[in-house]
Amino acid sequence: MNIPSKLIINRKYAEEALTKIIIDYICTAEFKMKRKKYRIGVVLSGGGARGFAHLGVMQALNDAGIFPDIISGTSAGALVGVLYADGYTPEEILQIMNSSSMLHYVRPTIPREGLLQISGIEGILKDYLKASRFEELAIPLYVTATDLNNGQATYFSKGELIKPVIASASIPVLFKPVIIDDIYYVDGGVMDNLPVSPIENKCSFIIGSSVNPTGYEKTVTSMVQIAERSFMLNMTKEVVLKASRFDIFIAPEELKNYKILDPQKAIEVYNIGYKETKRILEEPETQNVIRERLS
Image (cartoon, rainbow, N blue to C red; front, side):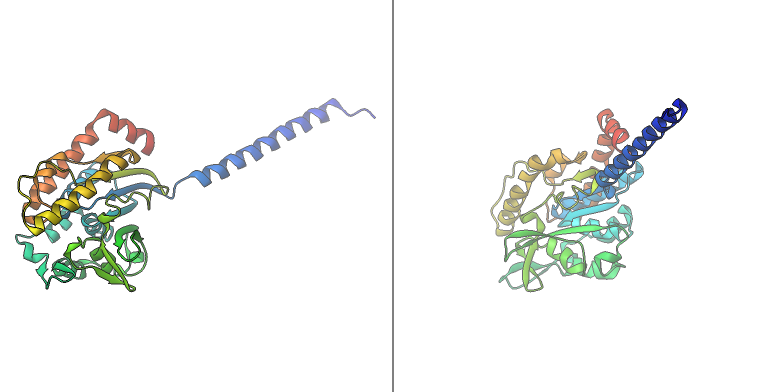
């Protein structure tokens, strides 16, 4: 039986078209699997009062049209992150958190579990946060705290909001641990001061802000100074290990001149973060990365 050549050609074209449809479908499915859930993620380190620099970083990013779709923070970074995720602008947060006295943030306690209690910060969060649970935030947030009982970092992203944030900022020895579900938690910086892990595989583009450079310290004699210095040195080593995991990494060296327990220079610290971020964003290499990854 002779099959007309026209029919053979049409069948060939049909098979090629079907093959192309199948390949396109497979490629699209693979793309969807590889595509990240969030476009831009921001990671904010701990660092006490140096955390005001995070606000300058966020303001500079916003001025450049860069807004996070998800945030991960430890300690001071968690405090900045929770207020930003709740809808406040960096300048509004600066106004909320800026104080002329350390007593606004902490009050002494009997030195059994810690020298100080973060009563002021807890009061600020209760007064200003609209959300009471992570799920109510406008932007998804991870808060890192250290589980003292099991010796590991815990990344909170669901449930009650204020307690994990306070736990994340409770520097051991200086501040009392926070108890959540019978577990004692302290500052997240003990185990993970630059918490990129929770969002690393969820974002297409990650920006890190670290506020923990260390320089020469002439006087380290009091109990508070020793605790502060030891804690900072422990946290600093993470910068070297993790910097390469970010598309943009901001770590102002000038912050080494500022104490982590002195909020009185909040405006200066804010401006350092802002200027350093503007400088980095204006670099040709950074602009190329932004064009390639975010366009």
